[in-house]
Length: 246
Image (cartoon, rainbow, N blue to C red; front, side, top):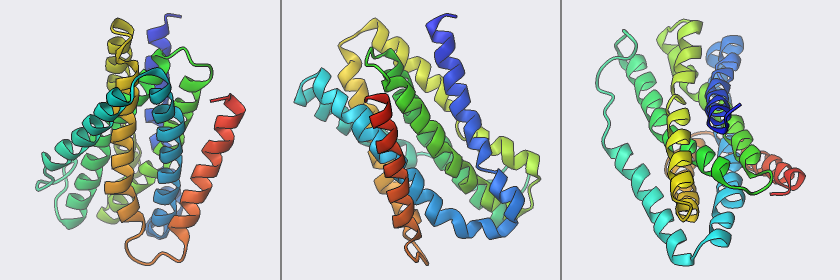
């Protein structure tokens, strides 16, 4: 099977993993909202280790410090730019009202930030480092699950069906196969882009953690949930990195 087909299938798999996050909402209904701080913390821990161990450290090993810094700043700027240029004033999936607007806003935030996650998958896949592509793909898939829960919770409150919640969750990660393909082709054509691409993806992911995930996780009643989630997510990915030799 051609390498690019394997990449696209893997990226589609990470997108489908987001739909799994809707399942707790199916089972718990509105009570699932209590899990949000814990799940966001878990996703932040997973993504943080993936960004540093899977992308940033290899970027420094593959290229110069200047290239890595440029990539980091570009990734940070990219995420800030796209967050400032979308609106959720209209309804969402044929429904209107405060609940639908919240659902639309959450969907758009997750949709926008999934593109740099796709960049991370494609860049890692283009690298010849043993175990790195599997590590990053698993990291993105694992952290996509609580993101699916995040989009399904307000949709449950707005009265959406389970089918719509599932496919909306998957839809938030639709840009990942596209981003993966773009990054893979770019790095394959210009091998010197590898450290810059690593750093770009890491910068966007770390910005997402600092700007979106952690502020949401630590807002409102916490009771240690977000901190515990971060610790569990980070520990899981550190163990995985050791097992894969990343």
